[in-house]
Length: 185
Picture 1 (cartoon, rainbow, N blue to C red):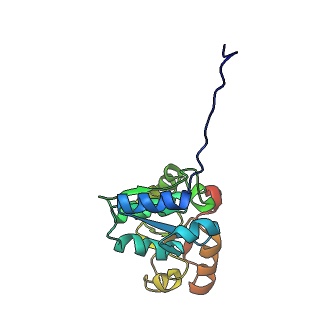
Picture 2: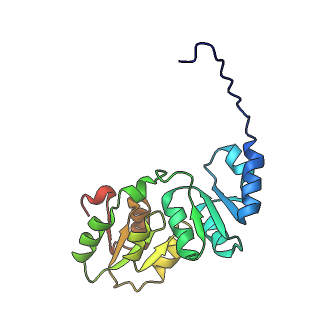
């Protein structure tokens, strides 16, 4: 019991911006932040952009460490492009509803039911789903890429049913669009 003693605790205010900048320099790190991040994070980032732009920045960086302020699939993509670099994500629970709606084991089973189909996936999916895919697209290049595929080739498009529906409307109905959570097709 400390009845006659007085304990003093000193709290030091941390200058987070200075500490982040110190670590960035010490570790030769680059900070990449998606547009939807808070202003304070964007202000500290070396680059702010959409997932495609940030993937390109990750591929070009000379940094040893990539801090990816985004969602899991973005950090996974940076790691795939930089297998010998340390890629950090501040929150491993930062997910994407499209990624979450397409579990790799269920997608593999769905793909096995359609063996003659070319698998085209929207970039907002896990690395495991990307590994099961023939072509990865973004919203800005999906239509141009789909138009290059022969008209008689059957296609599975996942996991964005809305982008898939748009592509069907614009390019002939020759798809099986994977519905959210793989229900229906």
